[in-house]
Length: 171
Image 1: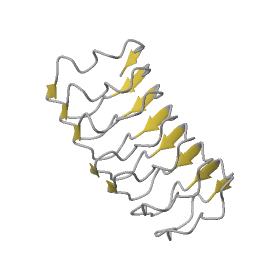
Image 2 (image 1 turned 135 degrees about the vertical axis):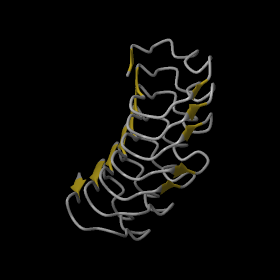
Image 3 (image 1 turned 60 degrees about the vertical axis):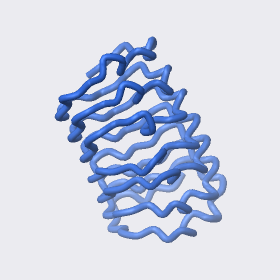
């Protein structure tokens, strides 16, 4: 476990965690980090928990978490994330809990949560989401909780929740 929370980190070099191959939990919350280099977690294949709340992230690049195949919890709350490029979460095949609340996301598409079939909890409240494509949650059949409150949703496709047979809480 490595806790670097409540510091004043702004930049993380690509090789920062290179030798920490056995690391299972990493907290980078409450810093001033503005971006994540695509290779930052390249050798962190045993990481199960990643805490990145309360930073200044604005963009999630495609495949940024690709090597984190053991990740079960990813917390990206309270950033300024507006954009995700392609499949930002591809590779996170064991992800169960994804926190994206209190950001600036505006749209959810079929590519957003692709290959997250073990996801059970998804926090998206307090964003600026205006529309949700009908296929957004199709690859997340185990979702039991989704929090979408306090957004600006004007378009919600009729088939948005069609494959969510495990859904027990929609907030």
